[in-house]
Image 1 (cartoon, helix red, strand yellow):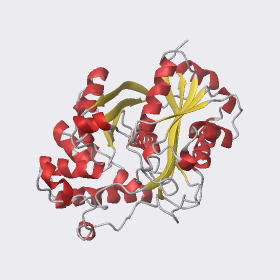
Image 2 (image 1 turned 180 degrees about the vertical axis):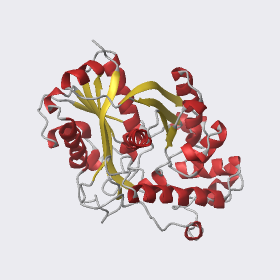
Image 3 (image 1 turned 90 degrees about the horizontal axis):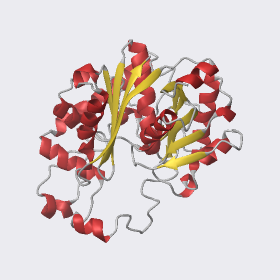
Length: 389
């Protein structure tokens, strides 16, 4: 029996603006994830009763997204009641971690068929709303990183200063993200990987007319004079335009053992060459992608030069920019279809959104090796290498 985990199907919803009135904002998160589950089994022809588990990422597990949304989505999709579901939270990398857990479970012989995915409706369950008035970190964390941890936008400002990126460079990167995403839609590149539950056409977050000049008019989004004593002078370069927008969306990957794929008569589309997760400085939390990338390449016995296409989540423009500088990667191989600045960042769904886009990019370009990595709040980061088959 061959327990090598393989990807046989991948799909994502188009992105909706994560605010009231957005294209997906009238949907319940469980129903949106259910749309993805249904699409995966319909496309593959797999009996949903054969799914051993559904592992879904979701970050803001409160309100409508509480109560183990993976299991709720299984039931909403009409899957048999014996199909279980579990929800994981590794912040922005939650669904990428779901893929790791699913693939590792298959390799261990614990599963034959698993769906890994994620969902976030930021329009209906706002970021941080699960905390209420409570401190999620506690006094010991505050004492260790006195006077406490900071929000990601401020971390982006710190890194922009430390790496010497100008406001113009950040805006240029953001404009290019929108240009690439708009061009991919225009050329039909996203057609196979997407469904549009909201009835819209394309990702609502993509702004084809974005220019550096327009981005230059936006004010800083995270300016906070109260931090100057702690960190010194900051130029406040990070704006809504060079950051990922609040987004609604869901995505999913259907994984199987090679033996199960053969039994179902399905063609494996990709296999995994390496997985990694690391911890890093939780204040400068966005740069964990650098050691994560080095770790996964080492485990896969590959070099940066071996990889054909990279997906690095654009939580903020500074993130892929510092990553590319540290690893000496040219921008032609980095987020060739645009990234989260244009395509959106529906927190719990972003990991499998990146993997879905990466798989289709490899297939459409005829290339072989892809690597994706995600920065995550608290200073962790995931990285994965896949090989198109």
